[in-house]
Length: 314
Image (cartoon, rainbow, N blue to C red; front, side, top):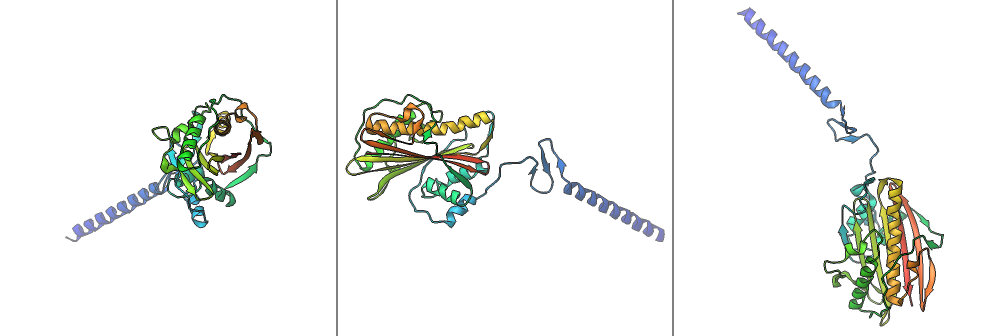
C-alpha cells in the first residue's frame, strides 16, 4: 500500500513539472514577437509597423481649437470623397493627417475653416511662407464668356452669384472639379448655405476632402444695394507622398482651381477677365474694378498647403 502511494505521489510530481514547463514555454512564445512578411511584428500588444508610417495626430487639431477662441459662424458644406486626387503612385495619409482632421471638424463645428487653419499655424503645426513672386504661375485657359451682371445685395442675390460662380468656374477644366462636388443635386447653392453678418457681409463655406487632399473655399460678398465686393479664400492641403511628378501635378491643380474661380468672378462682375490669361499678377484693374491676390505656402509634418486670398471690388 505504501509503495502504491509513493508511485501516485511521484506521478503527480512529474505531471506538475510538465505543466509548469509547458506554461513557461507558452508564455515565452507569446512574449516574443515574430516577424511577418508584411513588415509588422505581432505579439501580445498591438501590431507595430517597422517602416515609418504617417505621423498620427489623434485629436490634436480639436484640442487646439478647443483651447483657443474662434468666432462661432456657420457649418461648412462638407463633401468627403475617398477617391479625390487618387493617383496610382501616391499614398494618402487620410485620418492620420491634421488636414483631414480639420476638414472633418468643419462638418461638426460652426467656424471659419481658414481662421481655424491659421490657429494651427500659430501653434506651430505648419510653417508659413508668403509668396513674394507677385505672379500666380498658371497657364492660360478658356473661361466661359459671359456678360457682366449685377446682383442685389440680398440673400437671394448672394445665392445667385455663388451659384453662377461655382457653375462658371466648374466649366473650366482644372482637373479638380471642386465646384461640381460641392453644388447640390440641382446644381445650385441652397438658401440655407448662405449666412450673414449684418452690416458686414454674406458668406458661405465649402469643404471637399479625401484621403490625400482637402480643399476649403470661403466666400464673402459685400456692397450697398448691389454686390460690388467679392472675396474668396481657397486653402488647399495635401497629405500624401509618392511620385514627385504626380505630387507636383496635384499641387498645380490648386493654383488652377484658384485661377478658375478668379476668372469666373471677374467675368460675372465685369464681363472680362485677366485671370484666364496665365501668369496672373497679384494686383491689376478691370475697368472700374480692382483685383488683388495674396498667396501663401505652408509646410507641416508630412503635409503641404497653399492659400490663395483673392478679392475684386468696384
